Structures are given as structure tokens and as C-alpha cells.
Image (cartoon, rainbow, N blue to C red; front, side):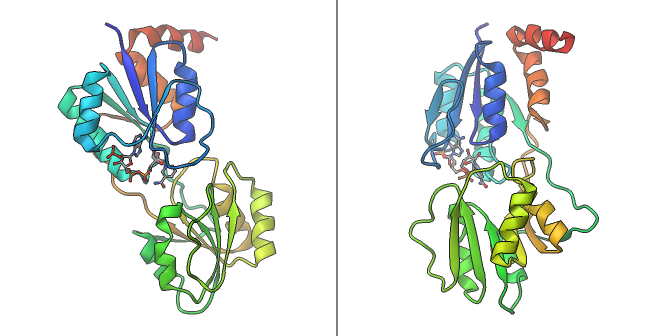
Length: 259
Ligand code: NAP
């Protein structure tokens, strides 16, 4: 049987998984097309939405996909729900690659909330100086609290700029280093960090820097995930899970174990 793996991506893990599987079986990586200049991907890529769960199901059938890997961001809840529904309907195996959420450590001053709007409310009534690490599409709730200064970091420019009296923008793509985050917070006099609990190494440094400086972090909790399929926490685990379904990969996994 000729296998075809579709990886739903937009994360570093998806890119790393694609690199690990490259040349070993038929593979397609799917991107939503949100960022203007996405990092180069190591395998064939398709870009743009599928048209909901039904569109994704049709794509899986048409392209003869045998395994679907949902390696999207932990906050990308819609595509994750669509992936579960489409895999079920098309009878395709589903593997969800979910990096673990960040855990609170001693010295952390965390507040965990359900939404960005709740996070903004949690900043309180007195003016604060807030470092904002959210997606460009998630910033609208900041408008409800114009009393704060916001330092907004994003991969692509925020357009149009936010209608706020006191805001600065930084363009950068992770990974970020802890000492650089500390220096940034000192330079701007930051006293609160507003972010999602995305997990992973690439963007954790802001929380470590906040801990060191005694800065409060307001974190949005992750949305729940559907219970379908197999869930793995790392690229290594994903490769091992895939090797169960795709015989061409089991030789790779055995060779790597022996190496
Ligand atoms: P979302 O709300 O779950 O998805 C919205 C729609 O975008 C989906 O219904 C789907 O359109 C399309 N889509 C999302 N991911 C796709 C993919 N990998 N391939 C093809 N279509 C996709 O997701 P989002 O929060 O907008 O995130 C979009 C992408 O950015 C994801 O790939 C995610 O991994 C990445 N990302 C998200 C975040 C975040 O915090 N949300 C952070 C970093 C990266 P159709 O219904 O038309 O198929």
C-alpha cells in the first residue's frame, strides 16, 4: 500500500517532523498561509484553508491520504476539530502532535485565564507596562484597556496599527533567548507579560525572564482538544507512532534506535 502522510503545520514541530520523514514516504505539509514569509519547508507544501471539515475530508480522499498528523499550534482549535472530524469521516488514522503546556515553577507570578479578554481585565485598573506576545488577530481586546502601555511583538506587522494612545511594536520570530528578553523588559520598564500558554522551548524565555525580574505573567489557558486518534508530545514520539502505520518508516526508526 502506498502511504501518503498529510501534516497540518504552521509550527516548528511540523517542520521538524517533515524534515525527519523527508524522502521516506509520500508527504505533504499544509500551511494556513497566515505569515507572509514562512520559514522554508523541507517537503512539498500546500497553502490555504480546505473549506472546513468537509473540504479537508474531500482532500484526504482525493489525495489518497492514509495518515493525518495534526501538528498545528495548540491554540489553533478550529483546524484541530476539523482534522478530527475529517479523519473520522474519511477513515484515516489521526496523530495529534501536542507540545506539553508550560508548567508553573517556584518564583513564577502567574495568573491563568480563559481568554485574551479575561487576560486584559486581569491587568487591573492601574496603568501598567505590558509586554504582549499574542497573534496579530488576537489583539482587539487590548482596545478595551487604553490606560496601559503595550509593547506588542509579532512576526508580521500589526496592520492597521491599534487605536491605542501608548503602544510600541517589535517584529521578530523566535526562538528567543532569556538574557535578551530580560534586557528588553528592562529597557521598556515592563511590569506584566501577556501571552498564551503555548508550550515549547522557542518562546519560553519571556516567562523565565519574567520570573527572574519578578514580573507578573498573565497566561491564556489552552483550548480543550478532541479525544480522537493518538496524541504524542514530541517529534520523536510522532515518528515512532507513524512507524506503526507506515511500514516504510519502521526501518528508519529501527536504524535510528541502533545508531
Ligand atoms: P484555526 O483558527 O484553528 O483555523 C482557522 C482556519 O484556518 C481553519 O478552519 C482552516 O481553514 C485554516 N487552517 C488552519 N491551519 C491550517 C493548516 N495547517 N493548513 C490549512 N489550513 C489551515 O487556526 P489559527 O489559529 O488561525 O492558526 C492558523 C495556523 O497558524 C495553524 O497552522 C497554526 O498551527 C499556526 N499558528 C497558530 C497560532 C495560534 O496561536 N493560533 C500560533 C502559531 C502558529 P478551513 O476551515 O478553510 O480548512
